Length: 437
Ligand SMILES: C[S@@+](CC[C@H](N)C(=O)[O-])C[C@H]1O[C@@H](n2cnc3c(N)ncnc32)[C@H](O)[C@@H]1O
Image (cartoon, rainbow, N blue to C red):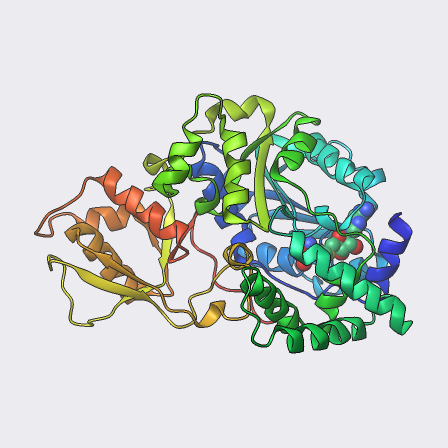
């Protein structure tokens, strides 16, 4: 099965994408919040499985010169391109290999990622992917495996079937995106004025497909395999290789205490364990995408039921919030903040909301009453897009007048802002955005 998949990526390279939420500084911060103690991002050993032309790793290697990065991919021409673009970057290497026969000797890695791979490979490769993680993950390490998940990905799967039907009807070559155009034309016209319960979901999917550049559309929607998984199926695969689930990188997805009261009540049943509750949560949210963190089974005892506020102060923070009233001072009854224009909405949140098309332009607001939180956010707003160490910010915010929360309450507040995508928490300095490719 690897041959047709290899041929697709050799014919047209996967677009060079960088994913800020998958930078080690962000992933290792998540791992820490969920009880793990990996080495600092600044000197992480990182492996990227299915790395394409290596854009993500190039950014990581350049932003963390003390890290060591290895990318592996099946498609030889992609690896050749990855090596060409990485010339002169000493801490970055690439290997061309099929995951089902990968031999990395006794190398171990603190962070292993496989982004956008699991959904597009057959079962034997899915299994080989987790076997590779199990073989090469350092004892304190963490792995991030992303996948399109059910039930949210079901409509996308159905649209893909329709596109392939059009492909056959039109006699198009594999990967010719003309099938998408044919399908979108009929559905767009048909959608006009449709006022049925599923219409919004369908509209969002059509927007998402329209926004995709042709090379992305061709791979994501028309490549030979597309198999979204239920969360519990992914966990089962990992468990088969003595790997344990930690959490999603999106704080909101697995922080069940933040769900509405009705959900919390449903999850409080005595026969409901964390994993079943998360699976039900995916149904309630109609979740379509997951970025799952895994650790070695023996490290899983440290994973708490919620991100731990006590682990926030050593992290650093970049805030995308600015006060609506630029004259606001700490100690006011309430200060309203809004997200700046250009606040990045990471792919995970966009996937959660199932529409990437209009995310970048949305402004969101939050009101803050606590004087120390006000002081902290105002200071961060002055520094944006610069980042700051949270322990230092907490000290600086000491001594402001008005009602002041404890550090724990303040850190819980920061976690909530992070879960809304309004601030970023990083292990070590927050990385500057990547240079355009
Ligand atoms: C959808 S692309 C994702 C690329 C990159 N991770 C990203 O997020 O931009 C999937 C990648 O997995 C690679 N791949 C597929 N099957 C593989 C296998 N059996 N062994 C190694 N790599 C594989 C493909 O060549 C392709 O580059």
